[in-house]
Length: 96
Image (cartoon, rainbow, N blue to C red):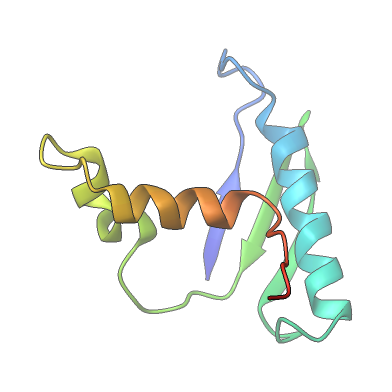
């Protein structure tokens, strides 16, 4: 299992509890839509002013490590930037 939890007194610049609540909502919607296995999300909830989220562990290369080339000094890879931008905004569909 992978467990995320925020530190309510951590002094971070953003509200991680809100971010985790949004992630949990997305997981629930993806599960309801049949895009995720119901076994993936274990549970989530509040704790002492914070929030926690538990999911099943999935073996593989962490995304942070998989995208290391994009962050390094040799990371100026236009094709990788195009892929990232394409994934972050809706695609316009043109019919030729």
